[in-house]
Structure formats: C-alpha cells, structure tokens
Length: 84
Image (cartoon, rainbow, N blue to C red; front, side, top):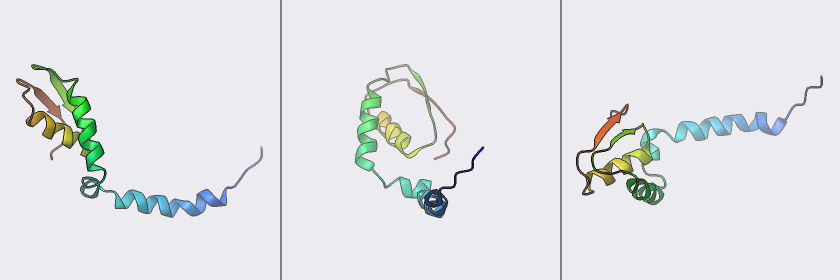
C-alpha cells in the first residue's frame, strides 16, 4: 500500500478549525438572515393547524419558530431540544 500525503489539506486544517470556532451559534444568528427567513416561509407551508412538530437546535429553526408565532396557525404542538 502507498501513503499519499496532501500538504494542502494538512496546512488548511487550522484555517477550517478557525472558521468553525468563529461561527458559533450567536454569530450564526446574524448570517444569511434573509435566506433563513425565506426557508422558514417555505417550511411554514407544510405545517397545518393541529400538527405536532419537532424543532431542533439551529438558527434557521429560530426563524421558523418566529414565522409560526406570527402565522394564523392554531393548536401547534412544538417539541424541541433547544433552550433558546
């Protein structure tokens, strides 16, 4: 077997680690807000009165929760693991 080393990948690992660290939840809330609202608007079309839905932890999901709150939907049960 032959080992192939990729110096570009190894040298880029600190860069990717830094990118991940800089995009913590609080920072991601202000990124791509327009797109997140558009996703929430589209997802809202799949939710009907009386549905039970699960909302996971995420900044796009927060926009969906806001959209549900301001919608005319009734009797929605939300299950979540997020404390935000």
